[in-house]
Image (cartoon, rainbow, N blue to C red):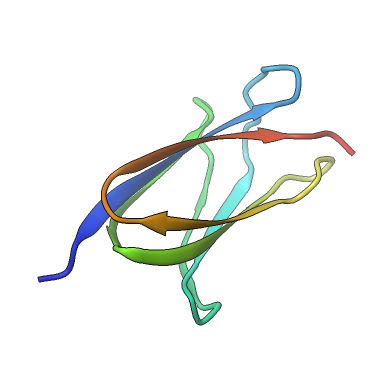
Length: 86
């Protein structure tokens, strides 16, 4: 049985304002896009049933620097991302 979790991302801009309508993509170890979504008007997006493993998280919003990080999911994870304006 594989371990799965949910992954919640909360976005803000550098001034602590909610950064809405950002594109959020989760890639697996083989650089295959496995989850894709948009941040809601609450500033969050949730990916459910994410298998345990290594992933790359990419967040893209026009007018902001792209955010990219590598992470390991072993259970439910919540991450806060702060986007910087260009």
